Image (cartoon, rainbow, N blue to C red; front, side, top):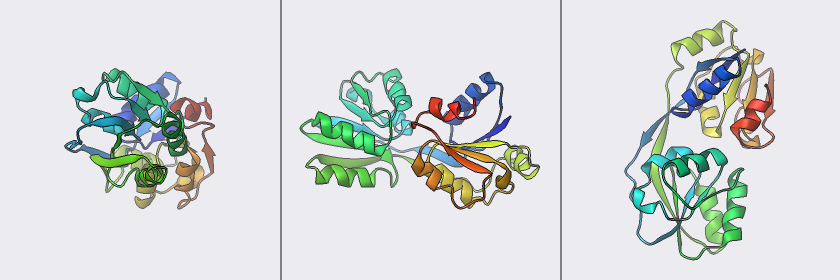
Length: 222
């Protein structure tokens, strides 16, 4: 089965390798370009909050012993691989991440290392609960102006059977490209929020992972 992979690099290639191992034919169509930004982080950080694995490369080695709360297990794995030793994953979405942070109730400054415009609602929610929170933008996600030619050709020719969507931002970027042929494609969304962002196009069906992990997403068609 030909499956469109819309997540940005480097995740797109990693997902493609998993699909090949499952016997599928991935077609890369990243809809966002990720640009790291200088990480201007304050001192005396009590905890880091990470909502995307894209932020990991921007974090300095000096913070490796700092407690880190992250949204999902894949991001948790990236943090540990980068050298962070006190990582806790919410294994879910932003609601689960808020619940984890609220349960731990660490004192002091919590710093969110996020993408542009990301994490605003979570920051407000934490501040309302009495946490000291600062957001710092450490990467930018820019929508691409066109799909890669192989992906556009496969879509136009009706060759794509499924498409994977890992974030609402990627879903919205894909929709803005006005792709053709989606009415014959089943869209697989990582979460209900991602599925909601896909409503601007006709789909054969939209299916949502039982839990917001890549394993649960791929279990829908394995």
